[in-house]
Amino acid sequence: MATINPFASAMQQLKKAAAVAKLNPQLIESLQKPQRILEAALTITMDDGSTKTFSAFRVQYNDARGPFKGGIRYYPKVDLNEVKALAFWMTMKTGVVGIPMGGGKGGIVVDVKKLSAAEIERLSRAWVRAFAKYLGPRTDVPAPDVYTTPQIMGWMVDEYSRITGSWEPAVFTGKPLAIGGSLGRTEATGFGGAMVFEELAKKLKLKKGATIAVQGFGNVGYYIAEKLHDMGYKIIALSDSKGGILDIRGKGMDPRNVLHSKKEKGVIDGCYCLGSVCDCENYKQISNEQLLQLKVDVLIPAALENVITGKNVGKIKAKAIVEMANGPLTPEADEKLFRRKIPVVPDILANAGGVTVSYFEWAQNLGGAYWTKDEVFKKLREVMTTSFDDVWAAAEKHKTDLRTGAYVVALKRVEEAMQARGLVK
Ligand code: NAD
Image (cartoon, rainbow, N blue to C red):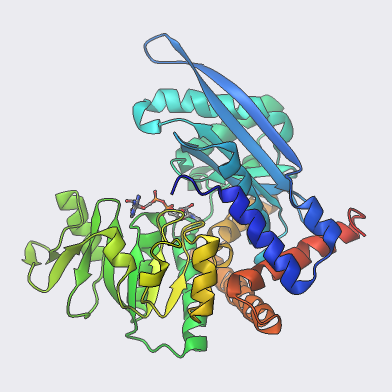
């Protein structure tokens, strides 16, 4: 898995879209490099009085359509190639859903589990000091990503506001509600995915009661599973990093019950429990690899990148895939699924509910007026359903897969903005 270079995959996808839709070569050339790469060494004082230095990044990929937008990842294995790929995908994601922002991504090479809360705070403030000159509500608006939280965004807004001397909540999104976070941001990615799922279900004529397997039981996996269950679909398998549960009879599980017993037992085991009453006969424990190979109507990878590759794609039996994680399929797997006529709703569309509500948060901060949760979800639905239709139409027009269709939609929007600004001819 580690040998797959995500930036190379991203550029492969870009070139494929360019060829399929005969896109402007100047645009494609300009999108093969980020506009700016920022790197810093962050030295902080640890709780024991010693100092430690961490590598940090911010990649500002493209801001033709608006300020750079994208999360900051705290992860031991984060590297520049990964951050560049994620920043490029953010450019495509904001383009595909048509929100007026560009793409960026950041990171720190760190294992947060080994740091105290005070050390994480000092590190987060150091990240802001290193890059503050290049951030701003109209310049670059970061957000949380893997292992970064609303609390971290709170510290970052505070640090940035101290540096500039004015209160600037719109410079980061994903903040706590108390300082301008948006209602609905927590559920936004999962719920947005469920809205896209509904559109796909209409196209594929999937009935309520269709079966679904979800890999990943974090923020994204949980909320999409909860929403789809409430809509009447059958969640027959769920997993986290340690393994998952399969409903052998295919009746469907309420993810709330699985979450409840995961909290009690610490793991998702092979028993489905309603309070203290558990059924271990009609359910069984499965591995993540088994989950991916289940015969279900729709498979939803919502955990990690590169889980469906050239090696295991032949064993996929789902009728459709909705990518909720970033980059769960390699280009080779993508190609093979397209040939088998298995539709794949790409990450840049399926999981764009998160960045869309981040944009809503930014707009609320700048406008100084706040929306109810219902308003947020109503606006989110409009964005997600329109974007799905745009992508479906582009894929049909160019006789290609949905990912390439999504790239074409996004790239045309970036091109229009770059042309309007005189950046490409
Ligand atoms: P999270 O940390 O809340 O949850 C991740 C889940 O994946 C956990 O349940 C974890 O147990 C599981 N997991 C980890 N390793 C696994 C493995 N080897 N096999 C199976 N499961 C494993 O993260 P999240 O916010 O839910 O993000 C999940 C994915 O969605 C990531 O790819 C992320 O980049 C993407 N994403 C998240 C958002 C968002 O708003 N949170 C937005 C867009 C994309």
